[in-house]
Amino acid sequence: MKQTLIAPSVLSMDYSRMEQETRELNESGAKWLHFDVMDGSFVPNLTFGPDILKGFRKASDLFMDVHVMINDPEFFMDRFYEAGADNYTFHEEAVKDKAKIVTMAEHAHELGKSVGISIKPATPIEYLKPYLSLFDVFLIMSVEPGFGGQKFKPESADRIRTLRGWLDEAGLSSHIEVDGGINAETAKIVKEAGADVLVAGSYVFRSNIREAVKSLE
Ligand code: DX5
Ligand code: ZN
Image 1 (cartoon, protein in one colour):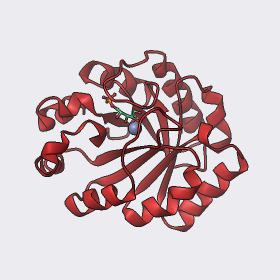
Image 2 (cartoon, protein in one colour; image 1 turned 60 degrees about the vertical axis):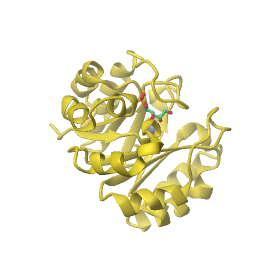
Image 3 (tube, rainbow, N blue to C red; image 1 turned 180 degrees about the vertical axis):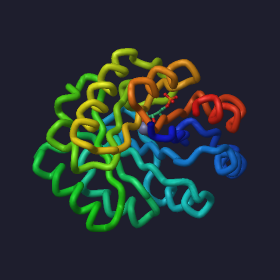
Image 4 (tube, helix red, strand yellow; image 1 turned 120 degrees about the horizontal axis):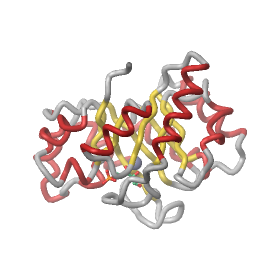
C-alpha cells in the first residue's frame, strides 16, 4: 500500500496571513502543496499565475503540485515548470486535439518533470484508459472544479477503485490524487478506494493546519 500524501490546496489559504500559513504548512507534515490555477473561462473562477507560484517556491520546499483548470493548458506548461512546478496536472476536457495529451506528457518527461491529467466528475473514467502509462498523477475531481468548500461526491469512490484496478493490472504505481470535499471522513473512503494523494483546502485552512493534515493521513 502506498504511503498517503496530503496536498493542502492554497486556494483556501487566508491571504492576509500568507507567510505565517505557508510556514505552518511547511511544518505540518504535508508533503505536497496544491496550487489551483483557474482562468475564469474553463471554470467560473480566477486565481493566480506563475509569478505567485514563484513566491511559494521561495517560501516552501514542499512538492509543488500545480492543478490547472484552464483552457489551452499546453500554452502555460513550460511557464509553470520554470516558475517552480514539480508536477503540472491539466484537464482532459481542456485539450481539444487529444493527440496533444500524449505529446504534452512526453514533453514534461523530456524536461524531467512530473505530469498529471485530471477529469471532472461528469467525464467518464474510461477517458483516462488510453493514458495509463503516460502520466505520473491521475487527479480525480470529487467536486465540480472552480471552488473550495464544496461537498464530496460519493460516486467518486467507485471511479477511484476502477482506476486503481486498471493501474494495478498494468503494473503501474502511478499516483491517484483526489480533489474536493476531503475531510477526516471522506479521506477514509478515498484511501480505501485506492487514492494515495489527498487534496484538502477548506478542511485544512479553516482549523489548525498541522492537526488537520495529521487527521487525513
Ligand atoms: C477546486 C480545486 C480544489 C479545491 C479543494 O476546483 O481544484 O483543489 O481547492 O478545496 P476543498 O478541499 O475545500 O474542496
Ligand atoms: Zn485542485
